[in-house]
Image 1: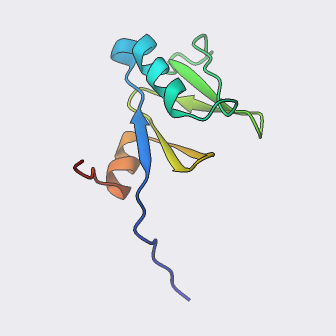
Image 2: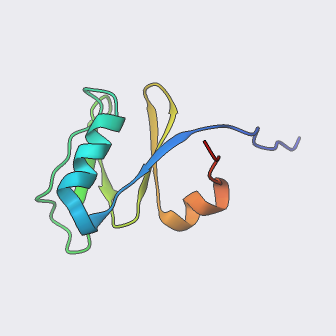
Length: 93
């Protein structure tokens, strides 16, 4: 059988390294309390921050331009800018 993704409306915030402190503050307000921590002292040269998914205790790189997509109240995905733009388009408010 074949399946097609249903149209979905999601909320997303993009990580902007140009103003890292403001971007982290925006993402911190966007993500449900207790689900993510930000490590601004990440080890990778290309990495400005890391996001830890608290329930699974795994780190996900948050690279410049990455998007944090909220599918439901406590379900998040990290996508690079290219992947995000292929899958989503902005809805005018």
